[in-house]
Length: 195
Image (cartoon, rainbow, N blue to C red; front, top):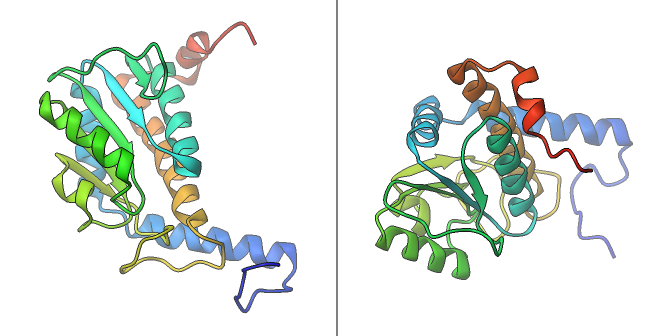
């Protein structure tokens, strides 16, 4: 049984897609440009970037880690068995939509203990990890198990936050490429070549 209970129940595909695009535009319009700049600065300053997230948020985070590697940054997906120890010169990028997820909170605390910089992407600025982070990037979209002044959605659970986070990450890649003086042709040789 479907849990979608919006006025778009039964609407056609194109109407629903147009509404989702409008939701994304509304979310992106509310993102603080100062937070974007602090995010870029933290990424460029780090010796190594560690990226972490779970569920669909984690999929957006993992895609971002790939693109950071294509940009030439030293990057590790935190859940990989070959991920090294984090140091005080490093950056943790954590996607934590509601701002408090038990095992992510644990990782956040361990990383803070060694003095690494923490950057949390969340929908809820006042939640635990974004409130404690060195840099918080707030994506104010409807998120699973989160409440606040958020862009509402016709979609279930945290779909809008997850999509908006992917869009933010892809746009950050464009910004970073420009700062680094890179063309797209510079990224391609860093793509895995044994697929």
